[in-house]
Length: 446
Ligand SMILES: [Zn+2]
Image: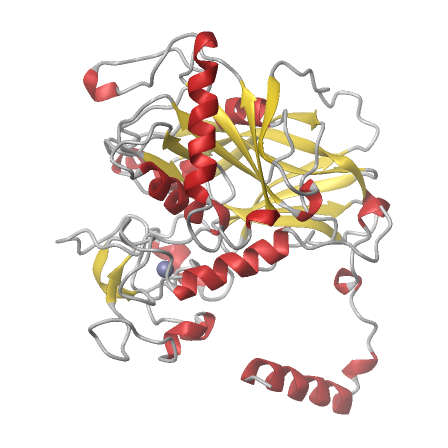
């Protein structure tokens, strides 16, 4: 029995002694029966995520129907507590939380840039959830900007602030129906979407006569992906499909080179003026294409061999489609680590004493980084993680772009340098998350 279970048992005993054990179990603790609340398809809520360095606001756009729901029927409420945003769906009648997940956004990263101190900006975003059968309330909670001292102080006691709420009527006929526009193709499909991790591959910058190039890049993605653990061992739990959405022009946009292309999702290099950071502000355009296939994760392959990409937790990932020098596969798997469960970058930017994303005074929520502020949230940081480092039993210092004040679990990891596989801490975090999103519903009749 570990310490956590021991304390839980003690609290239960205490509760029994004080009589509180007789209090009915909160409804929220009962399992949610998927079929009681949801249809087996997806509802998407589009909105604009707006603000600046100190303000964050949401403006509703519209509701849409998507044909597939690829999530687990039983893992409906996320308690990992990763990410800077928390989406919650409440049953209107009972107030019960019937669905939730956490995520991050490109807007949230932008909020930490110097531009956000002088400009207010909105980005089109969306959340997706199983299609409700009954009236529901959608909520978006935020941790706020971690570089706002007031927010930082708040982190210790009340990490989430409700930023947006929208009521969803089950019989609302203004939910935009789905019109299929694109073909899909299986790349590696082995299991039921509800018990598999489903990746949809979205093309960017491939013209109508470059479909073969895109298919080949998708096959390379799959081959490279399964070369790495834990994916090699879990190949039978992962599906990959592509959606064929051609672009008007071939190639990718590279602003600093004066190269602009009219492409499917408007991605470009030099996001936030970082050359290798290839992303798009238009998440809704990405979703429009992705929704043609069942998916848990969206990965955009771009018609380029220029080094670069990006991945944001439960948002989307991007990578250059063509392999150059054998690194593309490693980049994709690294970015997917960000995208799937928000693993942090374990590398250091030499000379960096401050980071736009991490603060040594705040325990990061990322599973693989610690500031030692709240070490109980990182079981590996108590000195029991086998050290493969030159530092002996102590943790290697440096990570999250900072040289000091932040520690990583192992000297080497794919989240640090592309030359290595995932470290054991990252591997375990991935497996735990994979188990959650693929949990089967043996007892539930859907
Ligand atoms: Zn790691």
